[in-house]
Length: 190
Length: 227
Image (tube, each protein chain N blue to C red):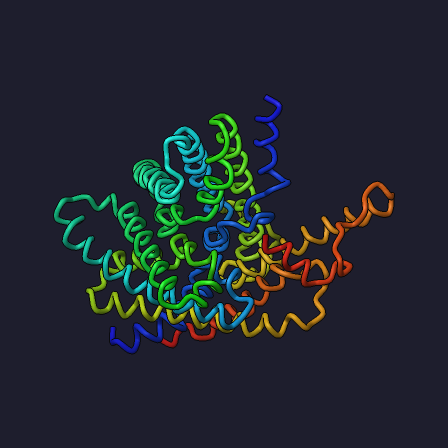
């Protein structure tokens, strides 16, 4: 598969949120404002790429030679947890306003299935290192795209009249469904 | 014993995990393509949640609070590895069907959420009750959503045809958009029911509407839903 195809497929055709149903908690929780969505999305891209790099190396040079593949889940999540801690410390020091706005959601990247999902999918598909990193970046970009689209719609929705029972999460989920429906149109592109 | 039953039953309706707490949405959306995979996923979560609540409650006084999250994750990841191996041994077709979502139980917010909110503060027997109740509620909800999606999307229930002849399945219900739509409409129906109950009570004069300074505008409702 060419580089371009991996890219298009991960962003549009197999969008991590809208067609694979991963990473839904931040998708619904962090999509109220575009600024927050942008911050969350970029930190997810960064963490996903770093995590894929680390876990790929660990899997290849530590777990496979010692026949400990069954510990994959445990090892991967610990690597991701420490990485997120690192990113958090970095942001706190370097970009305090962003740190303040992301607040509670940064530790939650650890429990964002998007990150662990990508590291596991890469192993299942048996990509080499370069396409793994590319796939990770593209998936993160797809996540950012979905988050930004959702934030745009939700900002408009603030001023609309919504039936009382649908207000809040239900309408957001239904909109996600419609968005996911439109992303289905990309199927068959690659 | 009374307290035990109370913690057990709260997960079945009052704090029903995916609907009321909105935790752990990814498996809820992704594996409810059929009723049977919903029930399988629910059982796996039930197992992990009960045992992790029990273990975390046992060690809650030993773990320093600064590293508690890392400890919780290690405990639940160990249990998930156990579930993975058990499923590979005894329920291989289900394991293949659930695919990547079995290892992803580790990052299901509900496990960590209950550990942090309940197991880390309560004695062992209550933590077990909480885990069992929440796990059962989760299984119920997943089976419910899976049933709706399977019946509408494929015309079958647990693999048996249930709809009339000539029924055209809405294929969209078993695809990704169907998951969002189905969960959104279920939540809306629950909100509607709860709202009507409150209105009824306030008409009888037994209880006022929940007080909010702006008269219950939509912003407050959104804030409440987020919690």
